Picture 1 (spheres, rainbow, N blue to C red):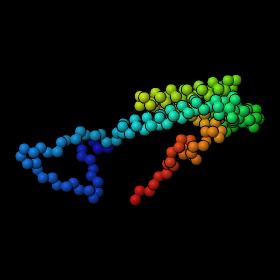
Picture 2: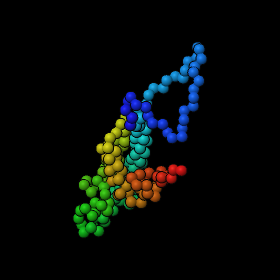
Picture 3: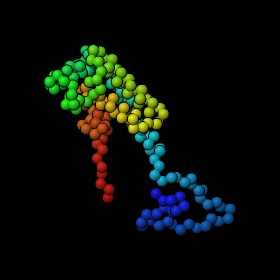
Picture 4: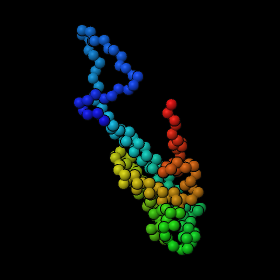
Length: 184
């Protein structure tokens, strides 16, 4: 970054067109306010709000559909799924079972799974609504949203894996692949 008193470097091959001096009574072009290079405050706010909107919709859908799909009396109960995972790892909740199905539900009471699912979705709704309305977030809030959504996705079995084939962190949000195109 250039010091405040120094001029910025110009691009190669781009020369400034000569300007004719303004004639009498004619004013020159209005001076633009100086923009500080390297600040992306508007891009950051827009990106955070769009991400929060995606999370808000995802948690809202999860809140309305979790009980019917993966609740206690759902089509594929997540309690049964977690019991099968626990049985596969010899009845223990250890690092292997946590890496196979990473979810916060391992640490919650399984007696009322519907309320656990509603609490996870409700907490995600609240945090994403806060980021959506205020436009401010930090790494902790975004990590909380990711962990809550990951917890629901990993017990959602086939119901949460329908929308996208795999885009890293956003693997279950329907977005185009994030492939980089070569610059020519």
